[in-house]
Image (cartoon, rainbow, N blue to C red; front, side, top):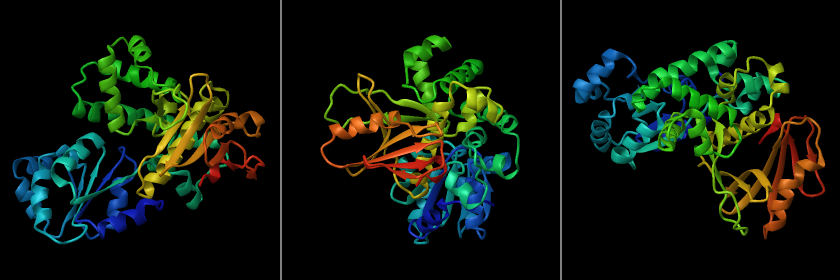
Length: 383
């Protein structure tokens, strides 16, 4: 098992709260992590039809079998259990009694908010980060390999051909999770929307264009995008509003939580195709953005990532806002640093009264500290 950075956070939460929910996309390693950290706890999978039937017919009876707690896997499949869990947790002082996992953030968070608020902690586990791969000596010199392979543990650990694995993953996701979340009758149109999203990686979200290209109304597009968000397939990077220039973009930018999924949808099957593909730059951005998200989630920090762009085209790829302290990040796939790389962050810095930390992430391998105060960091040393 590849050691997960979130392990320390999960142990801390389990010592503080009566229950912990570990959420993230399917196959991101939630079950493996929980079973490794809590080997003494019984494992209960609600994917098992018999267990699900038991939980549905007699939820109190199911929970009564686990006086010392358990790992309840894919608990969003039995939402009625949350009300019974509430009573169990209210009657105990034991910490880390039940560990819940789920791959549907919308259903899980909705039920937690309604019934378990204050009784449960929340940890988001995304696929493997570059930092985790580096520590396990599985990082490659070619960032294209990581874009193609993504971060799903099974692909990395078992050395499975990414093109084969992700095709099956997407099919399984549509057949199981989508049907559970929404009554989407036209699955071919849903897949078409998913592929259109992949082709727009790193671009401003345009509901009108997606609606026209997919042949469905904007309301349906918005609903389907929310499904993709809650299932950890797509990520919408929010625009930064707290700015002195009122003429700024207020539309989210579209990315994927995992670049391997995006590559599969774009029919990219090897690293050579990435080097000449029109989406090379956006996919590199996506890889870096995913890494930033993973680092924050693994530490239990909130998502505080934004982008900034004004109406004239000046742009900062990512802004990190830590209680008003801003870090402006530019992300470039090029392996040689060019002065053009600094334009966006330099322009933004000139508008801001106060210090802005500036960082350039690029496809090369040299660290630099520029005279303009910008740190230049290789893609595989992101910290």
